[in-house]
Amino acid sequence: MSYADPMIDTPVQFKQGGKALAVGNGGTLGADAGSLIDFSGVPAGSTLDSVQEGLTALAGGGVAGATPITATIARFTTVATNGDSGVLPPAVPGVQLTVINAGAASLDVYPATAAEGGVTGGDAINALAQGAEFSMATTKVTMFFCTKLGQWHTLTTS
Image (cartoon, rainbow, N blue to C red; front, side, top):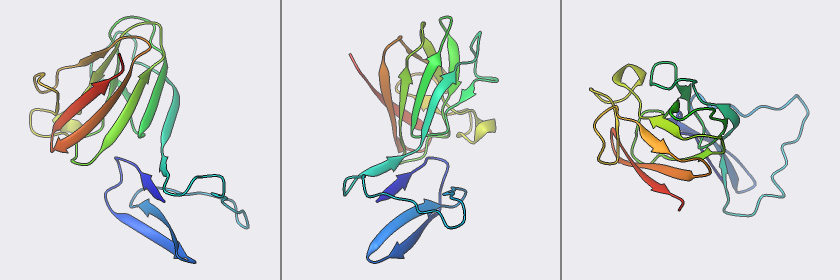
């Protein structure tokens, strides 16, 4: 099993009985003392993704103060007006994120700025200029993936 988190850059594996659970530097896997973490219902070969549910986009939009997307699956349920916004983590090769707009209006998704760990001038999405927002219509799901440092690519549902 693997745990994917774009904010983790140094994986650590715990092995027991030939099975591994990977957690990276800065990641957490928590349980109370004596508790059992049971993955018996997870099909073999599955990927456990981090999830942000019920996000609220920054009212009025813009990159400054935009709601951070910090999980591999992020679902925005409150997008009250067109242009309310969220911001991606830095674009690092191999990272894939899914953003869901379950709000009432279009969601602007911004790439990371240089101050947020993006490349000099800020990251980019598709052929948009560095730092330019990507607009997601309501009810759409977009997968963001990175193959080159500082550059996101997208695939959006129809």
